[in-house]
Length: 148
Image 1 (cartoon, helix red, strand yellow):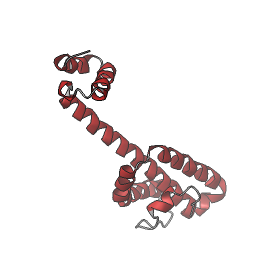
Image 2 (tube, rainbow, N blue to C red):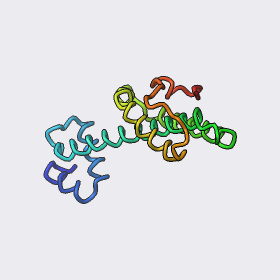
Image 3 (cartoon, helix red, strand yellow):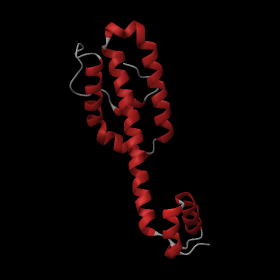
Image 4 (cartoon, rainbow, N blue to C red):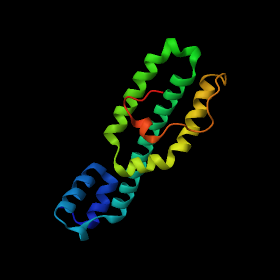
């Protein structure tokens, strides 16, 4: 067992071992031995990573839905690919999504739409008239059977 002072040192040397020791202390309810400063830092980083992951996946879904729905010039050549990409991103998102992260996506949906819109406008060389506001509900974006 590593005591608190050594736990802080361990964090700088081997963060994986630090994590295993921290988990062990939590399981044993030895809260006074925790390296709280680094534990808080790691939990905050984990939260940021999870949020970034689901936001990225949702933005990809929006991008591909926009291309599928509005880029008629490329529809015959690319629609199957876009649909497969939407399925792929939805499957990945389903694996990570929690109630808290879903709420975060609901709050960020309009920003993500604007980011996706910038991407598809550039990809289509601004030749397609995309809606300026998001017409997709979060349920539609997450629905495996919704394509347009």
